[in-house]
Length: 141
Length: 151
Image: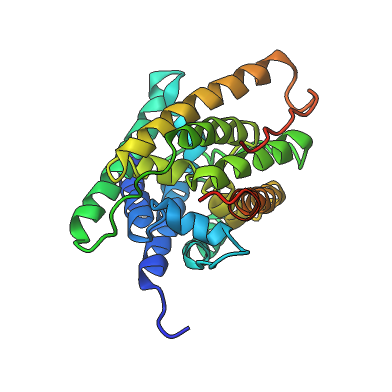
């Protein structure tokens, strides 16, 4: 490896900083699926911080894109039906499994939670198998 | 103040996802495609995040309460059970199908709204479906759902 991927290292550090700060200051897990689902319903005082976090997430990404002039263009032509099925399946899975890449993969592992380590290994393996089947057995993507 | 911190954390998280190109499903699928032209970007992102948050959380653990709240709100540990593993397995299928997990999908709303809007709406519906099923029987005691087959 000749040059380190500083965009990945820098971006990852910001994500780690966000997760650490939210726990240190507010005592909350920065798990996006949990924040998302619990922002959709329930008492307003429980929803407000989550809605603000999600607004920040969306705006933070938009502002960063505006600052990076050479950002690669968005993917085009990917089947929309597949995106919708993937969304449905992701919603069901993260709800049943109580978390996603951020909640289990970053916060959970940082808390040394056995549940989160197990969940992260399972969803990584399952996603790799899914891509293998789609790309190499079915020839898609 | 807590609301300000939550907003700031969201901004940092979104900036991190965009800068690291995790809002590009091509990067994510390239990492998951271990039999293809492997893209290590996601591994770098995750490792870098953990380099910050592992020691960060270790320091936090020495505190009895957060800076701005009465107590830490941690998930009640239910142990490693079938619901957790089945859910993680199902989530992995969804992640691998399009290359989006929840954070990047939300962060991609301004980058690729044509995909991300649909993904986020479908994700909300999927969560409602799973949530309804959850209420029907005591948590973690119902039979495992069959993981959906990839189309």
